[in-house]
Amino acid sequence: MIDAHVHLWQLGRNDCTWPGADLPAIHRDYGLDDLLAQLDANKVDAAILVQSQESDADTHWLLSLAAETDRIAGVVGWVDLTGDVAARVAAMQVAGPLVGIRPMMQGRAPDCFDDPELAPGFAALARHGLVLDALVRPQHLASLARLARRQPDLSIIIDHAAKPLVGDAIHAMTPTLGRGANVAMRDGALLGRAL
Image (cartoon, rainbow, N blue to C red; front, side, top):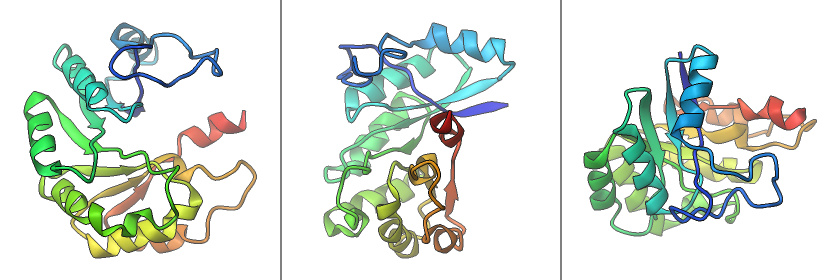
């Protein structure tokens, strides 16, 4: 069994700004030893580390942790999608088991996936065999569906089921997104948010 979405962080290091003091239950370092203890306690074989900071430093730190143990099955990192994405992800893939990129789009305009400046970055992710881990809100789903149609060779995971408000019906775009073979949804955080 693999836990497909785990965050590790070191407060004040690797460009770490989250979690803040406003989240006292998790406002502490959470590192590889913490993760390995949880994996053992729950009989989980491995985990995929997912960036929690919009920073190359965070991604490189996670990749370095993956080199320390075979219990890390992969890393979903971060990259600025407007830069030289192909060169940056190629360097990251040499550094460790990079399996995807998670640009943190949830605070951007609803049509952010239609931005032509991002198109070369999305194409580079597809060429490098990386998954786009889409951290979005429901208002982004229509734009994300258009990206999925434009870039059918890009595998897309909708992170946290697009973070609907607990109690809300699932967004109207969800069935449309599900029509493509390149889109999946991960919703493990919804129960936790409801508790």
